[in-house]
Structure formats: structure tokens, C-alpha cells
Length: 456
Picture (spheres, rainbow, N blue to C red):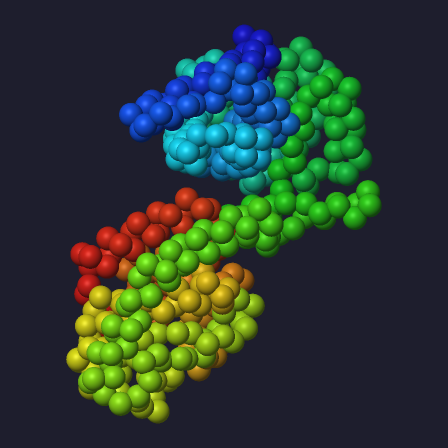
């Protein structure tokens, strides 16, 4: 059953995709059925759309799911295919469609595809995990070479039954015990008899022996994976670069090093900040500017140099909330700070003083979500006090961030607060996804409405 399932799964996956695609067209049409004389795409056009979807998903190998894949990765892969599909639909159908509601239909179709496909694919993934956890669709695996990392892998495989990997034991020339199957020479005798599907090799084994095992595995269609040593057992993604026939491991690559992720994040920033600029800042700036001018002399905006991406200095915009003073760059605002004006206190309490930073986002100095930028003097001080502090400048700073929604916002009163901020910023940079950005935005609204303790 374990082999036969993998032969049938891609076909079942494709059939399910086609069914969901057809359902999405129906849902989008149903949504618009009461809107005048709407004419949906005819059956021949729907057939073309289905064929386009099949070509895209088969070329992108959407049906290939690793046993250890996370649900968010499935959604991420689906989103890539969906962007391609919608772009092609917009090119081949939108220009020839005569219906006045074609744009509304396109938006409804996009939304239904995203949610229905996402629900379908994640549901299939969860069902597969349950299925494998019960002992079906498994892979037989062995580990060659005992060591600390090998023991860690064994523990994970035994704990995560949903991966569908059945651990048979170790082969090592020096290991004895209940999990030991014998020396490595015996592995070559047992491999075919035990129907081994996966070989995990400890990287500390002799290089010639590793090559021999890989050659044997190639001859018998067995997958081989290398267990990296302690120096590479880090909580981050590893990728590879190829120089001719030579490979190197990219140890400190981050998600936003990839062009696709950069474009996705920048698109979100531009759309969000443009919306805020047109519909909110267009009237908020004159209104707040008038109130600031009525209370105290000085500019409407407070412009401060802060460190951004790659430690480059940029001019960060805020509504002025204090009387002009010489200590703005070196002295943080504290509770009941005498420098803060009455309108400034309101702006700080509601975080409206930060709103002009959407202009920083629009011009590309900042992002909606990212590590909060600090003043240049504070930055220089923290660099000397906190390990890995500069790593937070790998990406653009944000109006809000993971540290802020986790409770570390406002005045920095002690070393624990700034160290916690840096740790959370580092985690965000390493684990970034568009879904994390969206969740932080939602959490920020919650914090603004219900948690104002540190806003002063």
C-alpha cells in the first residue's frame, strides 16, 4: 500500500483541484447572480481555465508534499500558483469579456479560489497526517552512523508518527544496543531484504563510505539524506548555491533574500500604504497639523534620523508630539514627560503620531511590519551592549513588529526589554512569511484598541 498510494495520490490531488476550481467558478457566479444581467464565462472558457490551472500546478509540482511540510508552506505554494493563474485569466478573459461586472467577478473568483483551495489542500494534508499516524503509507528508514545528531533524529521520527517514517535501526561499526542492526557492511546485505526507502547518513562517516552508500542507493532507487553536524543544526532554513559542479551551503540566508518574497512583501506594503495615504492621511495631516500649530510653535512633522535596512540612515516621519527640544534623539519619552504637548499626549496614546510613517513605507524606507527603528545614538549604544543586535537591520524597519505585539513597545526601561525585542526581531527575520505579517497587523489593531499601558 505504501508504494501504490504515492502512485495514485497525484491523480487524486489533481481531481480534487479540478473539483474545487469548478466549485469556485460556481460560487463566484452565485455571488453575482442578483447583480443585474451578469453573464459568467461560458463552458468553453471554463474548460480553458481548468486546463491552464492543471498546466500551472503540474509544472510547479503542487502535488509534491514532503512528509514534514507545514500547512503554511502548502498555502504559500498554492498562492504562487494562484497568482500565475489569475494573471493568465486577466490576460485571456478580461479583455474579451463584455460584461460590466467582469472585474467584480474576477475579484469574487480570486477570493473563492484562495479560500476553497486553501481549505481543501490543508484538509488533505491533515487527513494524510492522521492516516500516516495510524501506520499507513509509511517509509522504512535506517541511520548509518551513531552520534548526537543521529539520536536527535531518531527521537523525532519516533515521536512524530504523522511523518509516516518507520525507523528500523542503526548501522554502525562501533555501536551496540537495542537499536543496533549491525555494522555498516551488514547494511548492504539487509537493505533490499528489509525494503529500505530512506537512508540517513551521519556526516561524520568516512567520505569514501558515504560515496559507496550513495552509489548503492542510486542503483536501488533509495533516497539518501545527510544528517548535518552540530554547526549546521540551527533553527533556520538552509539552501545551496552552485558554482559550476561545486555546491556550498547558504547558512544565513533568510526568506526575504528570495525575489518572490521581496516582491510579495513590497506589494503588500505599497497597496496598504497607498490606501492609508489616499483615504486617511489626505485629511488627517491637515487636521492634526492645524491642532499642533494651534497649541505650540514649531513644525507639524518631527523628522528624525533612524537606522534602516543594512544600517542605512533614513529620515523617519512622525507628527510632532513634543515642544521643540535638544534631547529628542537621546532621551526617550517617559511617563508624564513634560516635553509632551496636550495634543501630543493624545497622538501618542492613540499611536496616531506614527501615521506619517506610511509615507516612509510608500517611498521604500520602511515596511508595514518589521523591527522598529531606533534613533542613531540609541542604535550605536545597543550595538555595543547586545549580541546580534545588528542582525535586525537585515530587512527594512516596520511601523509595527512582532516585538510590539508581544508586549515590548514604548519606553525601554531595562536591558531585558531591549534583549527581548532583539530576540523577537531575529525570530521574525528568520521565519518571515506574508501570513505572519497579516497576523501581526491584526494583532496590532487589537493592541491599539485594548492595550494602551505602554503608550505615552
